[in-house]
Image (cartoon, rainbow, N blue to C red; front, top):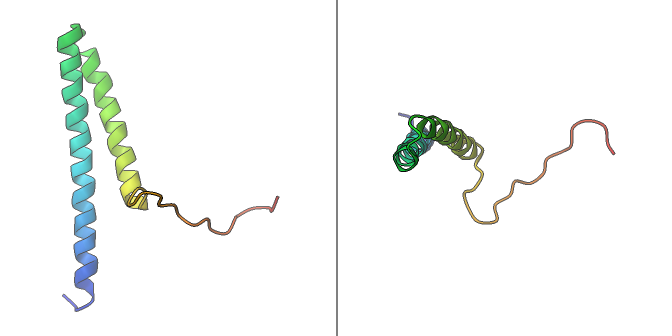
Amino acid sequence: MAGGDDGLSKRSIGLAFRIGIEMVAAMIVGVGGGMLLDNWLGTTPWGLIGMFFLGAGAGIVNVYRAVNGIGYAPGYRKEPGPKSGPEQ
C-alpha cells in the first residue's frame, strides 16, 4: 500500500467490523430476549418475533450512529451547517 493510505484503510476496516459486530450483537440480544420472554410467558413464537424486529431496529440505529459519527464522546454535537431553502 501507499504510505498515506494505511491509516485510512485501518479505520475503514475498523468501522466495517464495528458495524458488523453491532448488527450481530443487537440481533443476538433481541432473539435471546424474545426466547426468554416466550419461555417465561408461554407465548411462543410471538415474543421471539417481536424482539427480533426490536433487535433489528436497534442494530440499524447503531449502524446509523456509527456511520454518522454520532455518540463518539459525551456532549458531541455536529456544528450546524448552512441552511438550505428559504430563510425564515
